Amino acid sequence: MPPDRPAIEQTMLVQPTLEVVLYRQGLTPVLIGRLSRFAVWKTLGLACTLQLTAESVYHGLEAGETLADLVALFERHGTRGLSETVLGSLRSWASKRERVLIFPAALLLEFRTPGDLDRALRQGQVERKVTGRIGLIAAEDRINYGQFRLVGTRDYLAAEEVCAAVEADGLTLAVNENRSDLLLDSEVRRFAEPVNSAGLDERPALPDDAGNTAERT
Image (cartoon, rainbow, N blue to C red):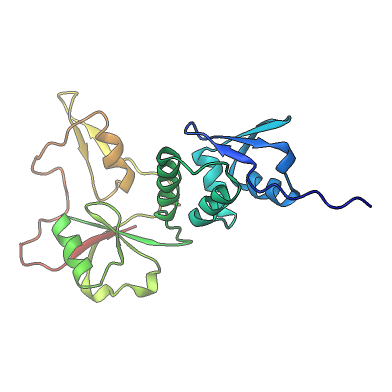
């Protein structure tokens, strides 16, 4: 049997356009498998090409790769070092994925004011701040109902309720916040501006020294 051919380590070039040029003589089954986890194959030939995208890198990270693993692989098999453009894109995509948190179940509390939510966070009654007025608790058994005065509850599995009415001028929407859900405010603000008007919110106003008040969702 002839002797084994020497392994060719440096067999790829990662261009600033995030296209990977891969020379076929250095391909191995292990390298093909690794690259297929986080890059999209474009052409096959003596010089194969692959493309790095945000989605493909995300799938690679979900499959168990890390940013350090990707950089180490490119440095080991690359004919030259990675450009700052490529490194910046990889870091950006990896950091966005690492900021995503998945909760199998959660309890959302909508507070009357951002100050109420900030006070609940400082006191450890809410685990995470989702928006300016919405906080999150991972499990309902962690909430201390004695520290809250619940003024409304929304069940998203129930049928939708009519919670907005058009006033006589034909331009003003009156919203009943006791019946509206958390998505209504963000959707309405896409085409309308909030108006402070007495009587639109049927819930009683709270004094400044009142405790935390929230709406459970």
